[in-house]
Length: 82
Image (cartoon, rainbow, N blue to C red; front, side, top):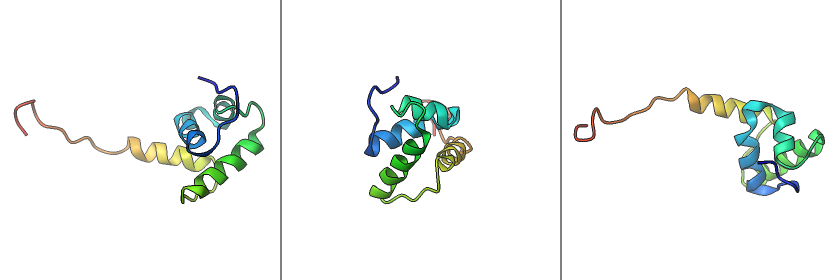
């Protein structure tokens, strides 16, 4: 769902990460920045710095998403056996 107002802080980070695989233009739009990609990236940078995370740019969010998908799933063989 597209935000009517620009998001900030952790809400911006969550929105950007959720839309990272669709590209920066879509993520900026969904997070309430419309076509203002420069402001979107600047605010995203500030938001991540505030929580102590360093990113070099929006592309770092897509790398994280790819790394998470490559993990393995560990689950029991059945509901009653490990």
